[in-house]
Length: 558
Image 1 (cartoon, rainbow, N blue to C red):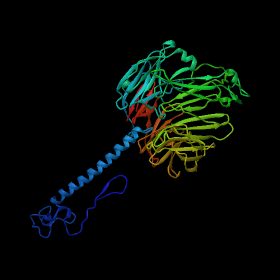
Image 2 (cartoon, rainbow, N blue to C red):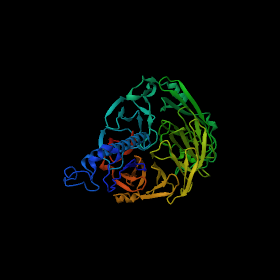
Image 3 (cartoon, rainbow, N blue to C red):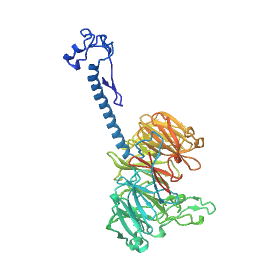
Image 4 (spheres, rainbow, N blue to C red):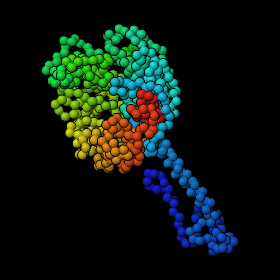
C-alpha cells in the first residue's frame, strides 16, 4: 500500500499473487502454519473445505487483519480529505466572492420577505457584513439576518431620514465591518448612533448644527466616524478657463483651470471629537468632470438644467469600510480610514479608485488609475500609509472572486484593450499577452486560472503563471439561446468552480457554473428557478453563503 503522490491524498493498494500463498510478515510468524497450503488438511482450507485456497484468494483469517489495515488506511485518507475540505471551506468563507459550493444547481433554502431599501436612484442595495451577520436598512429599521438560516437575529428602529454606513453593494469588495454608524432625525434633532455586534447600539449623540455650517453635511464613515466635507476658499478662486457646456446636449469641452479645495473632516461618532482633517488641493480638470451628475453627490440630488451643467464646486463620494473615494471637479482622490490622502496627480483628466482589500504582509492596498484627457491611462499602487508601491501602465483590475485572497493577481489592459498584462501586488510584471476580445473584466482568480469576460459574452481562462489561454467559453453555450450576447457581470467561486451571473438585454439573470480548470459548463439555469422575491435581484456572498436580494426580500441559495 502506498499513498498516491497526487494532491488528492488517495491511497493505492496492490494485491500481489506470488504463487506461493505466503503470509504477509506483518501478520506474525505464528500465523504461517495456519495459512500454509501445503501443510493444511482438506477440512481446514479452501472455500469449500476441498483443498488449498485458490491462488489470489485470501482465507477468512487473512482477510480480517488486512481489512483492518484497509479500514485504517482508508479512514486516514478520508480524514485527510476532510481536513483539506474543511480548510478550503474556511478559506472560501473569508475570500471575496467565496461560496462554499457552486458545483450543483442552486435551490432556495430560505426567504426573508420585506422591503429592502436601496442606496441610490440606480437601485443598488446597500449592505454590510457585521460580525458575520448581513446588515441592511429596511424602511424604518436596521436589520441583521443570519446568512445561513435567514433568521432575523436582531433589529434596531431608526428615526426620520435615517442613513447607516459604511455599506457596500452586492458584488462589491470588502463590505465586512465590525461596526456601523447611523444618522437619524431631521434638522437640529439629527443624531449619531454606533451599532456593533448583535445590534448593540450606543447612546445617541446630538449633532451640532453649527458643525454642519462649518464643515459640511454629515454622513456615516468607517471606523466609528461621522464624515463632513465642503469646498473651502473664496469663490473668486474659480477660473473656468475655456470650459464650456452645450445647452442643447449637455456635452462639455475645455478645462476648468482653477477652483476651490475640498476639506474632509472625520469626527468620533460617539464623542464628537475630531479624529482627523485633510485638505485635497484643486487641480486643473477636464470640463466633463465638472458637472453635478455624479453618483452619490455629497449634498444630495437636485435638478440642474443643461445651461447650468458646469458646476466647479460639485463633488460626490463612495464611503467604504476601508476607503473613502471622492470625486468631482479637480479633486479625484481617496482617503484611508485614518486620514491618509491618496491621489492621482497629472494633467486634466479623471481617476478610478479601487481598494484591493487587505493583502498579506502588505495591509490594505489601493490602486488609483489616472485616465488623462490627452494621454494613456496609468495606475499607481499605494500602501496603507500612502507610500507608492509602484506604477503599472493601463487600467488595473483585481478579481471579483478568488480562492487566494492573500495572493492576489492584478490584470492590466492597455488603452486599446487588446493587450493583457499580469502583475503581483508589489507591481512586478509576470506576463504580457495579446487577447482577441478587447477590454476584458477580471472575474475570478481560481485554481491557478484567471477568468475574464467581455461585453460581447466571451469568457476565457488564462494560466496565472504563464498567461497561456487554457480555455474559452461563450455565453451563447447556455441552455437559453437568448443569453447569446449576455454579459457576465458577477462571479463567485468555491475554489474549484466559477459561478457566473449573466445579464441579458432585458435585464433578467441567468446562472452558469464552469469548471475553473477546464472551462466546461457544469450546470446553468435562470435565477427565477431558485428565488421567489423578484427578478431584479442582486447576488452577494456573506460568510460563504450565497444570497439574492431584491426590493421584495432576500433569499438564501445553496
